[in-house]
Length: 180
Image 1 (cartoon, rainbow, N blue to C red):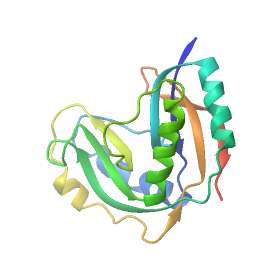
Image 2 (image 1 turned 180 degrees about the vertical axis):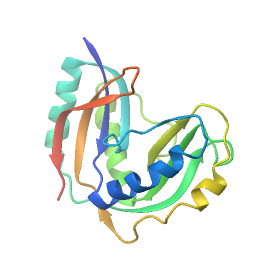
Image 3 (image 1 turned 90 degrees about the vertical axis):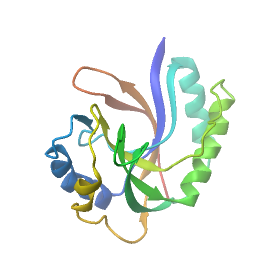
Image 4 (image 1 turned 90 degrees about the horizontal axis):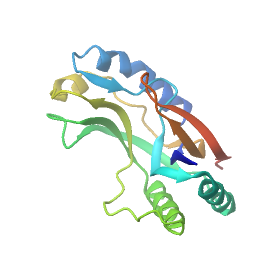
């Protein structure tokens, strides 16, 4: 049976606190959006989508064999895909060269099991919301408090099962490893 899966990094506590602080302002901006729920924030390294359970077990085994060091990051700017004036996705960026290397390694592991290699450069970001109707966020994000400064560290690497429902996705860890 196929399950919907992705591989992600867990966030530092100060990042989660900051996201909890800014989400009310975003939600009250007037934008029609599906906002990321508290507890669902993470940095997606690889979205796999439908995955046979037997393949998910094999990927977990491959991940278990990988060595993961502490992965530093810094929160950077707010952005949107394709841009902040007409975003379909609103996000806050992260700077982390090590994270980009880890994403490439995980992409290679998943490719062994038939998942295509990413054809676009990896852009580390935390999705804040998926925008349903066009809304210009330039002024809104300019009024938000700045993100925590300094070097932060990801908490863990997690292979998640994603269960979709009308109230939004629920994420269940299939495999996890603490970092550092």
